[in-house]
Image 1 (cartoon, rainbow, N blue to C red):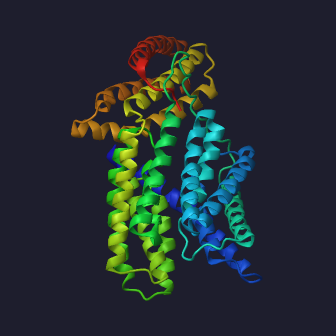
Image 2: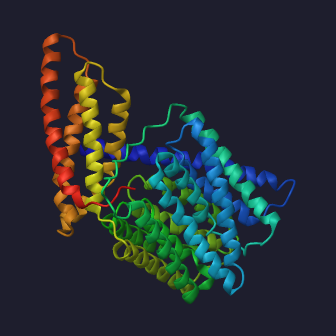
Image 3: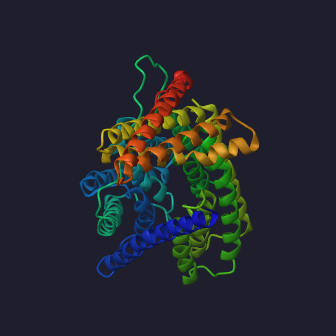
Length: 464
């Protein structure tokens, strides 16, 4: 079992690394070809590469019909992000306006999750430019020409990501789990709204801290806040990710800053290291966010080292920015309209059991519903993302989420048994009769489990 899990993890990591590399390299080459006729700003080249790093994962679940909307979301996000960055490089009042608009810009896609899977996917794509625009070696040029170059860079990255994704995976996009219906009597603020407010306030506080301590390097505290809140699934999840990613970011920043000091500014080896580390980051994300954080910050350290930004003093500022960003991000998740991990877990367990009931019902009728099977698979995938947080809570004996570890395990076991029976081919009537009896028993168990979850979720917040 252990060796199988290792093989699966390594396989996923390799696929993710390859998926990122085969997009990053063509995008970098395309931007280089533009230099043969024109002179694109260096920031546009960096912007395109950073988008190419994030896009493959963001579009992995999209089908061909969904790409036009995703491309529009990317270009809209790019225009907004570049506009915010221009303001941040301006006078005092412009910096304040840019920081406020940036915070709103990254929070709105989180709030849009409430509108369904299509808006969720568009929001995921739209927020990538806000992360990419933070990495810029030179001051932004507040001009229409510069905005045009940045939008062209976004378009090139989008085209390559779409082309490679559709050629490599022409099959239909995987199903998204159906969100549990909001209780009619619920007056509590939706989880997506809470998380959006948390993120906006955390990003605003990170900008304020960066402006106060190190105005020239706002990327470190702001980027760390965005990393901590990325894919947030409740305050317990934010705490776990915050600890893991902070440890990784501190290690990556410290090691890479020391290594870049051995290379002179402008050394091409630094750029080679950046591309190699970015590919490694895409792969190791499938193993642990700590490794990804370490690689991402290491790549940034090499990148800025190429432009001569290195040394012990800079290392201290970077480490301080990472620590402050992590503290701000976790504090916002816990103190500002907190979303309990137990509530999110119960909602996802309920969604899994609902999908299992639909599949069992269709299988008992003799015609397993492929759509129900896809929904169950997607719901199980979403619930599995919370398992590390639940295991951590149980291991350290903190938080109410530790009490749900057994509930999650039992629900996933029921769903797995239903899946096996629904997809099994039976050769004789006796086997079919035995399977029907087992399905009936499983249906009763699922019904009892759903009742227990509904009772526990009576005070849960509205789903996102």
